[in-house]
View 1 (tube, rainbow, N blue to C red):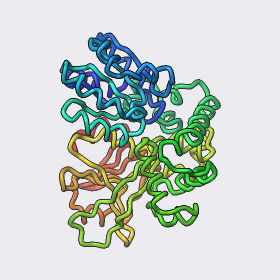
View 2 (tube, one colour; view 1 turned 30 degrees about the vertical axis):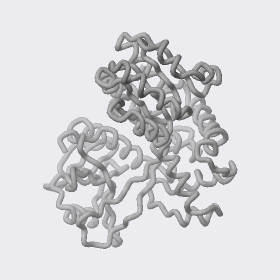
View 3 (cartoon, helix red, strand yellow; view 1 turned 90 degrees about the vertical axis):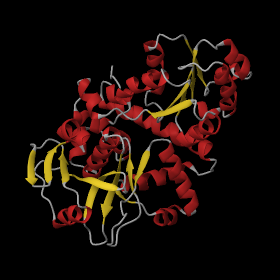
View 4 (cartoon, helix red, strand yellow; view 1 turned 30 degrees about the horizontal axis):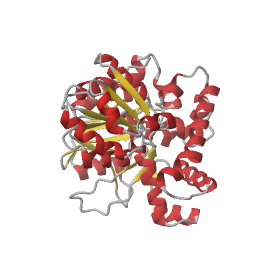
Length: 389
């Protein structure tokens, strides 16, 4: 059992709000954690999965269902599949404004969040269930390398063999392409076009995103590419890391970088079957970079945001941690445990005037490289330094 930090956060929200929305990728563990929350609150619960025709039929008369279960915690999985549900929830909540009445689960955030925000403002709290992070994995006696290789989907992470893991990811990917994509995007992209797009994203993971180049290569319009990437981001499969360029006089790269959020899916798409294969693969550096960024984004202090920084002359920081409108730290991500810093790194810290900076590696010692830059392992950074930034 992997204990999720989000369990405590959701439980606290359920004690305050009549409805809580849990957002996250398919198979990330939303149903499991929702049932754990209901058990922890000692609430009588009723569960509906809107991908099941039988459960959808039970909700044909939503108002009757809600009135019959007014004293239960109603858990609705894939809630975005029934937008009319949100309209029915509002009068039910107003009739009995009691915390913890509804748990809504969804795997496509804008669709669900739009319906919720339009009808349940002030009545609902939203929270994302992300992939398993390093701190959760280590508490469950799962190594950092195992998490990095397999990714943070709980079932994929805990399968007994790498063969089982590879089969799981393969079926996840195929079901997503064959079943979900065109249905959820209202596009009619062929499976081969979608596969080519995923292959392109795999090859540019960690690089600047060029919509026009992807559009030309696939033979589809730029708006179609943008729409599809919007969908992949809203389905929690990729992230577009934005550049930091406020109050900077230099010529700055202003296009986003793209990363796979789950390293296991990236490794499957690269044909990587073992951790040893990963170590010698050309994609290993970008994979480690994306993995570290996902960890920092999950565990960063409240009130901070993350960006990257790159000038047209090549000075670059993999991450800039910003509080308000002020950069407070730069982070360089290195695969080597004996990292070397370039002239561009010093240019970045001088441009952004950050006095606390880090070089994060898999397993290096913890030491000061100079007065304003510290080298340390990812685990040390997450447990000792990140919360104080």
